[in-house]
Image 1 (cartoon, rainbow, N blue to C red):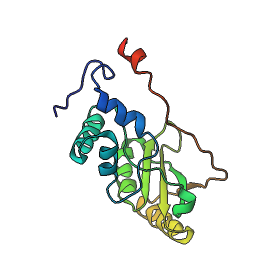
Image 2 (cartoon, rainbow, N blue to C red; image 1 turned 120 degrees about the vertical axis):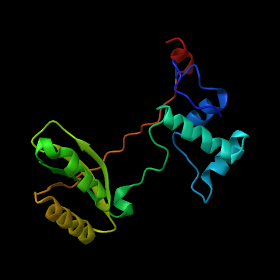
Image 3 (cartoon, rainbow, N blue to C red; image 1 turned 45 degrees about the vertical axis):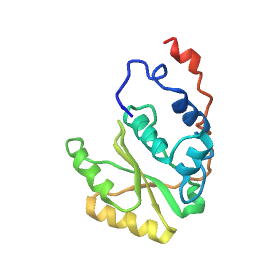
Length: 166
């Protein structure tokens, strides 16, 4: 499979790419070999499904392939922020990224200019990880635990015909 960035992403996706995107925005099988199960349902091979997903990601059509977990059931997590010197932001970001349980690290235009989510198996471990990271950074970390959860369904029908005209 040739994987390159097309001029019109939607127009250059074939039927299998579109079926893969439409069928698995949600409902990815939970099993030992989910891509094998997807391949069987789509009438292709596991290797083809994996290759197409990798290509779609490389082309920027998909940003992520994987499950979304209910963090409350999977352990403990919270949103955190830290105010770092702007000139050293990238170096601090690397330290944060290296910490266990960190994901979704991003910069913001604010006094607190690095925001991230940290996870752990339980609350005591989460606090221990935050304290260790605070020590490494030499800066206080603002802890913003979730008070109320909201589920935002990010799956949606793709208007393929409309996109082809653009």
